[in-house]
Amino acid sequence: MRLIELVVNSRPDAGAVGGLRYDAMDWRRLFSRAPNPDAGQAAEDPAERDRKIVLAYHDVTKHGSQRFARGPVDLDWETQPNPFRRWAGAEVLPLAHTPIGAEPRYEQVYVEGELAPHALDRAFASQLFFDSLALSAWKSAGESRWSLRVNPSSGNLHPTEGYLLAPAIAGLSATPFVAHYAPKEHALEVRARFDRALWDSLALGWPAQCVLVGFSSIHWREAWKYGERAYRYCNHDTGHAIASVTLAAAAMGWRATLLDELGSDAVARLLGLGDTRAPEAEEPECVLLLHPQSAERSAVELDDRPIERFAGLTWAGAPNVLSSDHVAWEVIEATADAARKPASVRARAAFESPWPAMPVGDEAISFRRIAHQRRSAVAMDGRSGLARDAFYQTLRRTLPSRAGAPFTTLSWSPRVHLALFVHRVADLEPGLYFLVRDPADETALREAMRPEFTWTKPPGCPADLPLFTLHGGDVRGLAARVSCDQQIAGDGCFSLGMIARFASSIAEDGAWMYPRLFWETGVVGQVLYLEAEALGLRATGIGCFFDDAVHGVLGLRNRAWQSLYHFTIGGAVEDTRIAREPAYATAPAGPL
Ligand SMILES: Cc1cc2nc3c(=O)[nH]c(=O)nc-3n(C[C@H](O)[C@H](O)[C@H](O)COP(=O)(O)O)c2cc1C
Image 1 (cartoon, protein in one colour):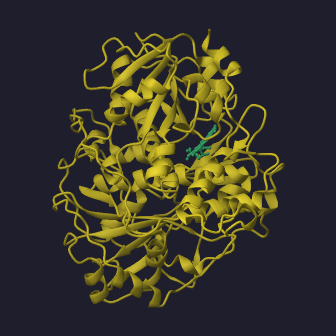
Image 2: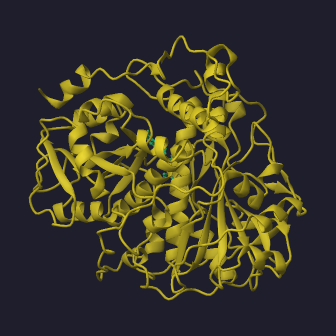
Image 3: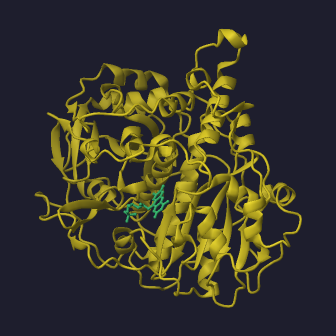
């Protein structure tokens, strides 16, 4: 049977939600956390109820060739959300533009200990945001003008907001503070100042020099265009932001660690998110601890008492209104509510990486140039190829190596593997391939997938790269078909689906693991974006795919494994009608 027939013939259980038919479902009842008296659910464990909600959300937001997830019928351009949150009335601290030079080299950033740690000063804070969440260009065509950013976002809608929580920083602030990052201005908006004693009690036992970077998501920005599937995209984007900040910090010799003991309430309290309101509320995502790589990597203690005191700070500024009107996508808010993380629990983390950090070669590629030039291709040329060793090297970069950014930031064992559709890699037969990112999952994956898959080592594949050939053949049409018929997935050198250990992650860790699975795919995605640029190619994240058709191709029959994000890498076709301008007309005032 040809692979394309597998898609047509696969019979996924799309349409079924926890045993209910999707069409007949009572939405409010299914997505409500309140006990359902009809079903005698008064005694249902709330954590179990939350698991059911995220699983139901996942099922009903699957795209299929016969039915797309619910979204707006037409885009209402009048209500397009403003991509820039501002806190009116908050004190603004302009950040400096750090000129982009040849250093550090791209490969150095992935290896701890390669770069001397930067001092914690204004230049550090400036470069951290400049290389991660800042604007990278303005584009225009006809009457339209829009900005692009260093971090990617589905549909360029940018639901992710960034925050800095820091002690006094030379040249920037004489007191500890919480600030929102405003990308258009490349500036910090100070939401709260507090005294040194509170910082010291918060940071007790942490490395002497450290800051926190936090993220929130404005679901409405993404839901405006994508409707109910948007919650997934917001979490891809959080993952991209985690990787962007981690790598920007690594470029200055600093390490990032996700403080995942924190519950969502504590994240909201630390970032002052209680001042935002539905339908434009900021959903608390996570907080990263950043500190020099030379400091000991020890378990970080988190004390609730100083965090509680953030509720009593004086918070400055009022959030701007992003849209004149809104559509309520209740399913998203119900799912976000169910996926909020309780305090003091952590995801399963037993994982000893078998992979050392990759060796640093002498290629003179500037990391910062790569980060700032990163773009999504809108179309691939269907011609460009990739050398086999470069392909293997790119895949190697996505493995969670020991002592290397960005995967050491995540606190859980890897859950995401790559199913690859190879089209144009020199000396490699086109076909389906698979990269196992946690060797502990290999047996279960082999058992779950089609018995006819060969699981052989491709020619020339390095011994330490867990890459397998599954099935040879031309998979260009198949890749495009399962990617919502987007040609871009068949016209690159290769495309891929990120296959997550799904049901057991939700069952064993909790509903709050659901967004984290997407964060991990976003971190992998950011590495792929940058690798593509370093290869002289271009990547595009693909959020639109026919979920169960992908599962059908691989033979995955239930929720044990689910594809969460797709990607393609190839030679981009430039749209010459679009004009480009620099990200910032003038460098902000102030010394470096
Ligand atoms: C989570 C995610 C999903 C995306 N899905 C698609 C997609 O299905 N098809 C597509 O052509 N581009 C897709 N993109 C590319 C975005 O449209 C692109 O990132 C956005 O326009 C911003 O442009 P930039 O990446 O050049 O900054 C996706 C990007 C992300 C981050």
